[in-house]
Length: 285
Image (cartoon, rainbow, N blue to C red):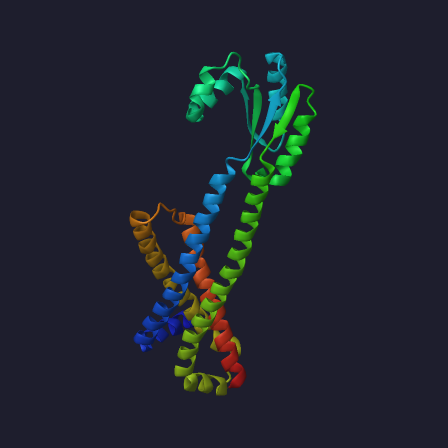
């Protein structure tokens, strides 16, 4: 293992310019991948923020005792999909309407009786904020005898589900494409290093060196260059994010765990690129 580490270190010392060029090329390829990751992250967070508004509202029949609604609310809170339950009385519903619908103030002032019913508002947990679960919860709420009607904005929630699915599919396809491009670029830079040491590799093969022995320094070199490139790409991504966040729109950046995962991904891509390039060269020697 020490010999492999020494060979890897010597490879950087033998061709510092080529090594710097390789790391820079890897950094920019991963930087593009990182920018896409930032876009995907912020789209996912935005959709998550919108999904927080998914709720199921059960309207209560007039004359239903408050005690009955309170007991039912406790039962609804026990549903595994439910995050929170709120009972909105008729008076609270009218006060909310007057606050939120100011353009209808004249109508509200002329009211002789409160036309708005009491309701039970049900917030769903994050994994269950979709049309299927909302429909299931609405069906269960409809079974309560004091419930007059149940609404959850079916069309809006279904459109949100479609948007979420499209974003996930596009993210998967485009992310895979960027990863493939990064592997090709990294493999090309490692291929340059392999060709530079083609004579040395041939001599090693003549004296009986195994493919594993020949391949190991290049794999470690690709791993190191991938990690260094990932670190540089992270710095570039942070700079781009800071400019966008300051001058264009508010945006979120990677968490420390996501940043570490990105650097690890750079190392894996470097390892894969090296494995492909070295394997192809060894087959032709």
